[in-house]
Length: 282
Image 1 (cartoon, rainbow, N blue to C red):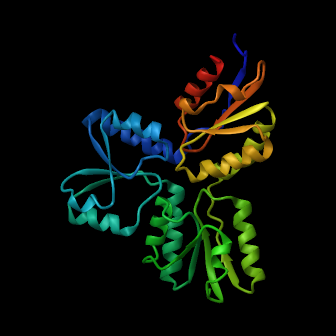
Image 2 (cartoon, rainbow, N blue to C red; image 1 turned 90 degrees about the vertical axis):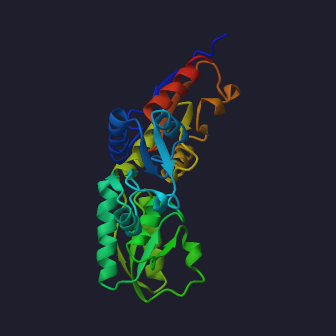
Image 3 (spheres, rainbow, N blue to C red; image 1 turned 60 degrees about the vertical axis):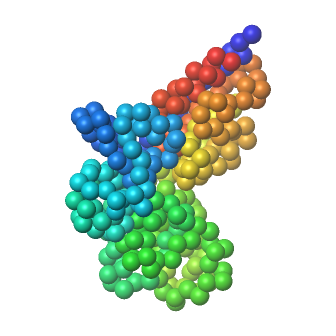
């Protein structure tokens, strides 16, 4: 018997403009040439990566790059460190640069700070592609931390400039700034968080409260997916994280419930529609 679930997709969820730009660029080249290299996963979503691989996208690592010659390589929205551009130049590699404009602007600001001999701290996820690119602007001298507790035993300079990965929580960034000032540091804080991401927090709060259950669709590698899922969970305890249709648990849904579906800035709309169709079929 059908559970008669009322399912709605959040109209504001799905790809941010930086990801749309990168994927559009990749699809255009794949349509013309049938093959394109991409430095790292084009987006933190395995299903979307698989879809583009089927069209001819080949994911390569930074270790693979020096071994390529006379090739076309896409730089994804996360941006890259200066070293990548140097390697490309040496190997006659054509870079298709789909770096997000928000990330590029941040890279330039960090480089200017570094050139001005400022000490730099970056609030961001260790090893994240965007953060590696940001740190690269400082000759890898910037200190990266993803939680303020990491700084407890670190001897920090008296004054420094604080930046953030573009997809971090605004509230957490300002809480970190205040805490560092309270510890006696002179902090020049640059709020470089993408508003297209941060504005989703409030929208998601309202969305999550409006339904009996929330299904949040995101790749497990997505930093912003973790942040946005926590927003949903805080607003609606009946929130569930899934990466694809196979992770849906039919047992959690009760008859005649309303279900809201939302996702990260790296979640494709087609995947949320697949999840919607699967839930409606229960």
